[in-house]
Amino acid sequence: MSKLIVLTGLDGSGTTSVARKLSEADTGSTILSGINEPYTSCREAIDRAIRDKCPMAHYLFYLSAIIHASSLAEEALKSGNVYCVRYLIDTVVSHRVAGLDVRLEYETGLYRILKPDFTVFLHIEEGLRQERITGRGKGFLDKTLDNESFRTKFLKEFEFLAGHFYRIDVDGKSVLELTREIRALASL
Image (cartoon, rainbow, N blue to C red):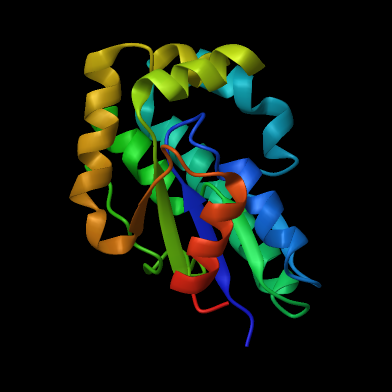
């Protein structure tokens, strides 16, 4: 039976690299992002225009993107495992930091989101994270997370949801070592 494996962590923690390596080792698997087309093409405009002005509208945009990703994952699971970089937990954490009282709910009277079989939070030391994101170029959220107070709020919200994921420390581990650790934990 195929599994939905979600990788999360602050930008620069290696979620995308680890997802690629997991998929390479898993014939028939699929890599998804929590934000896919058509959402990716308007994401930056939404972030800049409404994130601070109307946090609930911003949340609903991202919730809609996750519902869409869930439908893509359900289809892809017919062929093999799905490795998803960012998912509902990221949307909830981000918007809780913005002051919204949202919860990690996969099914409500309004929507149903496929619940992950396994979620892993890649934790990284801040100095190493900064090296990585500076090397690739900082995006909008990267610059926002440069603020220590804001970054601390993110990490506290993830800790609040710690019962929903396995934490793996990235420091000193290669992508291959992280991949092996996740495969063992997720029984892949």
